[in-house]
Image (cartoon, rainbow, N blue to C red; front, side, top):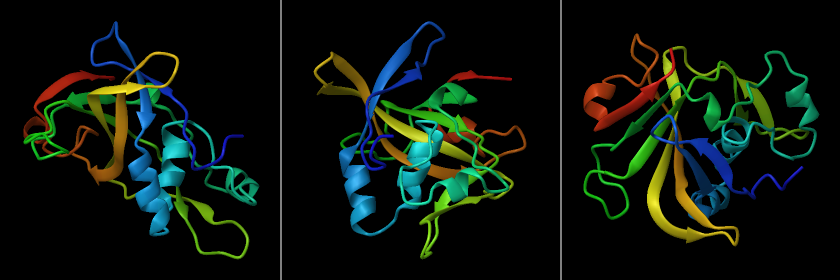
Length: 179
C-alpha cells in the first residue's frame, strides 16, 4: 500500500464523454494540512479519490467498522462542473477549475485515539463532496503531461437534486451529470 501522504497520478473522466484526464494532487494541499495536523482531508483524498483507505496503523479497525467507509474514485462522480465563480490561484473567477461531485454515504475522518487515527463517519445528510481540479497546468510526471492538479476536497450543502445547492449560479458550466 502506498504511503498515505503520497499520491500518484490518477485518471479521471474529462469534461466531455470522450475525454479522460490525468491528475496529480497538489503537494501544497497535502503539506499544508499535514503541518497543522488536519488529517481528515488527506484521509478523504485516499478514500474518495483513490478508492483506498490510508496506510496508517490499525486501519483494519476502519475497514471492519460498521458503517464501512465508501471507497470511491473520480469515476464515481455524479456530476462535473467548470468555473467556480470565485477567485482561485491567479484566476479572478476560477475559470479553468473543474469540480467533480461525489456522494459517499460514509466517509473517513481523523479521530484522536491511542489506536487508529481514523474512523468511519456519516457526513451530514444534505451534503456532497466536491473535488476541485485546477486544469491547464504545465506539469510533467516523467510519463507525459498531467492535465491538472487536485487542489481541494470539501463538503458542500446539497440541493434536492443531490448536486451542490445553487449549482446553476455557483458554477459557470455544467458538463455532465449521471442520473
